[in-house]
Image (cartoon, rainbow, N blue to C red; front, side):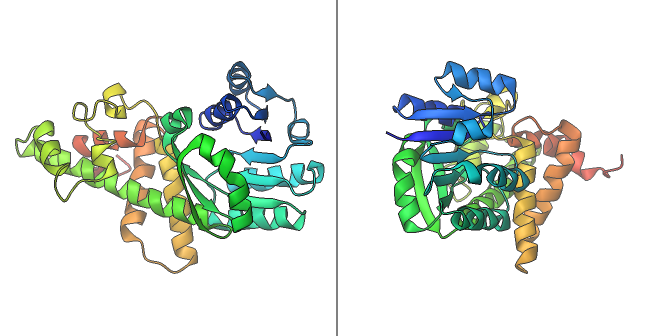
Length: 300
């Protein structure tokens, strides 16, 4: 068993840490939010009152943080307190450049870095069925596998440092674009007299089938477990989708790649966040599509 410091015990990190506890690992946690700390403590996480107290003598440090700025700041704070050769596994979603900078910091201090962002949302974190996209040297990836197996249904070694983040932002750009396309199809279908169920039954078994339709259908009814049946209660929020699309566009611009649909999806999610707020599930964007909100001028 492993002694793990888990930094960031929010809606994703908390359940991930809890699953490691269930698997028999010793988990020390830290989060500045009292509510997150209380929930983690109930799940058996040994909550500490500082980053340093959490990471001292840990074999592995797992981070789940809001941004690259937070990740780099965290590493700057904790690296002097780590035992030699600590495995640093970051599951935040950050810019590829930040992931590589964090890996350089870790290696420079004598540790083994792994960037391993996740897909699967809060439900996947709770169930231990996340998908991890991993960027790391092979030796570090192999060292991380026993922990990844606890938290994941699948993990893929995508390449060296930063490759996990690259795979995540590319995947989520497809997700953002496809959810808008599915939403527009339902809006058009309704205007043509099709029931949602009829369109779903055709599209889900034809060439339009995709995860945004068959697993996360944005209209109530066809997929009972989708957020649409719970007033779009957050699984993966609009704010997080907007964040990931911005990361994808920044990477595209840095590398002179044209991603016109990704750029337009980013603009629409930014507009939707102003209309609906950032906290409901990203699939709620269908409400703006059906209401014709995107046909209106943004200033209206």
